Length: 477
Image (cartoon, rainbow, N blue to C red; front, side, top):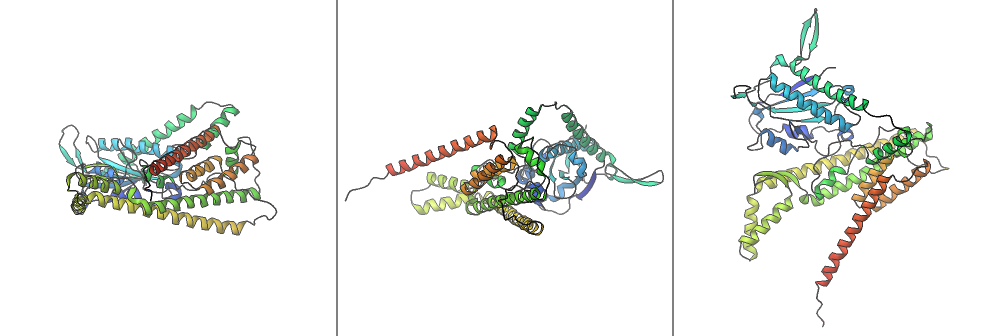
C-alpha cells in the first residue's frame, strides 16, 4: 500500500484565502457525497463549516491569509479505503482519525509542538483523498520560540530514489506516518469484525430488520440545528444503486430468495427510477423553500453584536434590530426606522455572510435538482432501450425496506401526503410479496411518533385559531 502526496499551494499572494471553501464545495460528486457543503474537521473538532475552519486557522479575524497557509492532499487507493469499514460513514470516520494521527506525526517531524490545520475528505474522484490546509505559524519544540514553516521539506515527502540500480518511490517520513496511521485504523476495523459473535438465524433477522430500518447513512450532514435550515440538507440523497436483488429481498425477509431473471432485473431498474423520482420531488421542495424562505435559515457566521461565531438568520438580525430600536427610539415611525437602519448598518458583515451562505445553499440545492433530473433522464432512456413493459400485469418496483422507510420519513417531514400514500402502497405490496410484516417494530414506533407529532401540531393550530377568534369582539350594528 502507498499514499500519494500532492502539494497544492505553499502560499503566495496577499489577501484572504478561499481554500477552506474550495475544500468544502468544489467539484462535488452528488452520488457519493450528497448535497450541500462537505463538512470539515480539525485536530479536535468534526462537522465544521468553512467559516469555522477559517476561524481555527485565523482565530483573530477568521480570514486566513493565503501567504500563511500550506495546502496539500493525501490520497489512498479505493481498495485500501474499503478496508477501513463496512459503510461509507465508518470509512470516513476512520480516515479522519488516521489524518489526525498522521498530522501529529508531521508535527514531530517538523520539530514543532503542534500544527494548526483543518481538512476535508473528497470522494469526487476514483481514489479517496483528504485535502489538508495548515497554518505556517508554529511553536518550536523544546525552545518555545516562534517557528515559520515556509514549506514542507522534500526529504520528508514521498520521493524517488535509486535502489539496486532501479528507480523506486519511497514514502518518506510523512508518507510512512500516514501509511502507519491508515494501517492502524484498518487493523482496528478488522479486530472489530473478528469480535462479532456467531448469531442464530433469529438474531440475524432482528439485526437485519433494525439495520435496514435505520438505513444507510451515505454522507456527513451539513448544519441541522434550526428547524428552518436543517431540512434542505437532509432532503436529498443519492439512489441506492449498490443493492442487488438478493439484498433487497433480505431487507424484507432474510430467508427469501429472489429469482435472477429478466423481470426481476426490470423491477430493480423500476425501483431505482422510483427512488430517483421521489428524491427529485424532495429536492425541488427543498430548493423552492430555500428560495422563498431563505432569510429564515440559520447559518454559522460572525455575529457582530458579540464578535463570536454562532447560528443566526437574516430574520434574527432584523428582528433584533427592530427590538433594539423600539427600546431606544421615540415611538414615531420615522425615528424607529432610522434606528433600525443604523443597527443593521453596524451588522453589515454579518448580513453579507448570511447572504453569501444563503446563496451558496440555494445554488447547491439547485445543482442537486439539476443533477437528479439528469440522472433520472438517463435511467428513463436506459429502461426504454433495455426493457419492454409487460401489458398483462402490474409490475411492482423493487425497493429495499430501509430505503422505502427513509423516503417515507422525508415525505412526511415535507408534508407531501400523495407521496406518503404512494410509498405506503408500495410498502404493502412488497411486504405481501415477501411474506413479511409491512413494518418492523422500529418502523411502527416511528409511525406512532409521527402520528403523535401530527396530532400535537393539529391541536396547537386549533388552539391558536380559538384564541384568535376569542380575541375578536364583534360590535353589533
